[in-house]
Length: 218
Image (cartoon, rainbow, N blue to C red; front, side, top):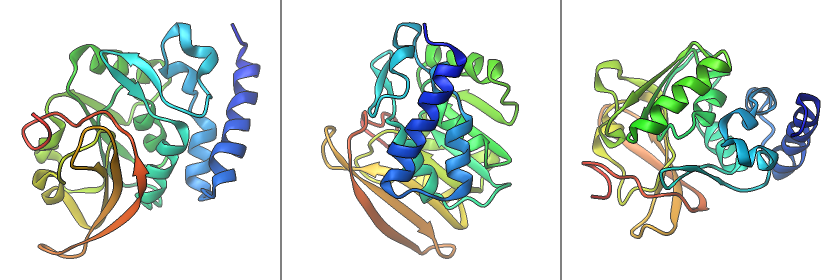
């Protein structure tokens, strides 16, 4: 098993080549990616692959996203520090941890109970106390805590869920993969301009597991 020093070197190399090397250089995002120990959020037998340039399985048919994609989504939220963020698709908790390095509060929803519980453990062990994890339907969001300054969705939706759009603060960004099939999607950034107007930006093609739920795939 690699030592903490080995993992730290791999993490720095990952950030230099996979993140900064691909054009993501926002200081808060880069620092968050350097800080979070990705090896703490992957299964034991895959820890040596923690900083590989791709997704990894975490059980229950789910994956931890490629580091670059996590950084891209966090960067697209355009956080400046102190925001309240909704994270859909907790998985093992890695993206929530990255978000929590910047935001003041992160509300994270995972539909699979076993993953939600493991994420809580991972985040507690890693010392993150500004993240709340709920098991439920992420397509419906977390209405009692809305509005959110940013919403990140780590699963592909057939359309943008109206519930999430409604829970976005004016001026906030919703980053979500959307596609008519469950194999590939376009990563969209939805910005709420006013009470009932939104803008949309396509950030490029991505591949995510399907977003299941009342306002997602059935």
